[in-house]
Length: 425
Image (cartoon, rainbow, N blue to C red; front, side):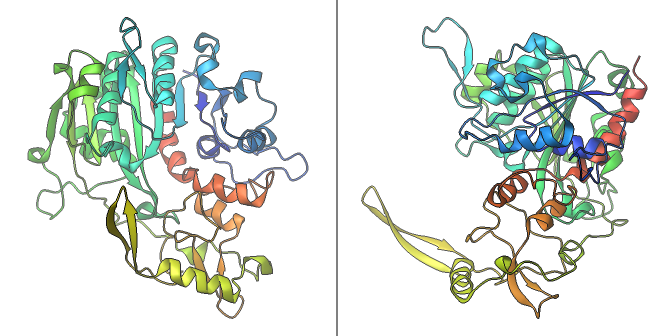
């Protein structure tokens, strides 16, 4: 089977950078130097609330001219026109995936807010890609707060109804040798009529989770019963999604605990809390990522900014009033600057602004002066090539990296998925 990819919600191309091991681009043409075996046959990136499509423009600069519908609202794309592929990928936003009856009460179910998941679901129905790799925030497994696990339960049921088996794992990139402690949920699904599915049928759910699944092969976990924090077959929690007659039933009634690792086959979910095996991992520190020079003066903090960050990162108790009810909003203190001797904290889309979550470092190349990270350093935290996003204004560069994924994690997963696809006819 050819290694072909359709990339949804493509952003600035994180999945493509990871799968094709891109470490640089041609400085004259701006085109990425792709070193991997994957052929990207179509992508889609559309930001609904901006006139200038910075992410799409960056993607097009790095990978060449895209199809007209590549920069179109995915809900308006005729799914039958999307090319066939062996792997469907996407880092879709986490929204409310509840379902409700249409206004006429005659058209079944429809998404209220989670429209992007329903677009993926439609592609699964129409195009039936043999393999799927998705990325989302770690809180997906527990959302929404008022009905824990409902959203992920809906997604798993959709996969099951479309004829797929699913594995998932919450991976902390910093734990496995990347420069950022970024926790994300990775979902791997495969169609039940693939050779891979037939081969996996030889193993128990415990064996797939602990040693024979995609994630166990690439991101080792501790599964020695004698070790504290390890897993055993008795730890597996079993959830039967098939007992709900429809997705609407899950939306209305389901509430359950999905742990950081799991497997679903034929509507039966097996989930367990696992512990990473990092015995052979060398950590990459923030000091390994920062530029080896004195950077532009604009990145250093002035006295006013130092004072502002000191307040934002300090402990506080702020009185508030909501609908006549008085209460206090409290925040604990955090270090006035980030340690260079650890992988970085998770980047957010507000990175680089005057915000509590913005990284502050003492620059060893300029008398330990306090400064924010540069856009290049943010790209390195997500394992993009330097200056990958220099096609757009600086503020947008920070936003894109705060919204991106760790390409190196995708590279590792892609190598194993490529091996799997090689065994398919």
